[in-house]
Length: 207
Image (cartoon, rainbow, N blue to C red):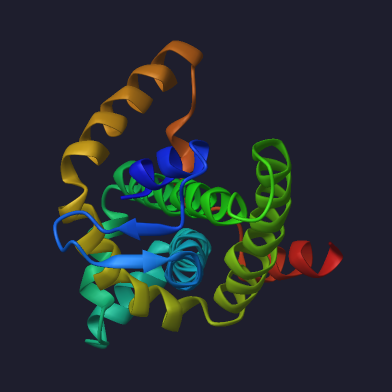
């Protein structure tokens, strides 16, 4: 949809856009509204992935075991994900990059309705970067730091679903990054628990 929409823009003929398959005609305002809605949805996805990384990788194994023993909702999913931290990290990074790149593409398309191509790229890049930093990174990660255990249990099932849906892509990057780590001498310890909750909180507040 967005590829053909960009083509229409480049040819200066976006008066009415016909949606593929359905054949529904949408005006510029309607396409803009749909695009903005998708951007907001993707921004939530960006926050989901970035906060998941902080919550899951700041949980020590003994705390996860205690959660499982207490039979808390989502605890088993957290333990399952942490059993392969490299795959977990790849899942989070692949998902986060997909939503951020898609968000940027949609934003550039929408801004292109109102500005020339060069200006649209600049405005879109600055706008999306600002939104992602505030609502997709800083705010979600701050929340995850303050609610580590609870948030980890909340996001675990969602990440498990993402891993299954994106399994082919995640598997490719899983082995590619393994190879790169072997070549560069990357340490597996980088995928263990990052730092303590207090250390993460201090780092965020110091920014």
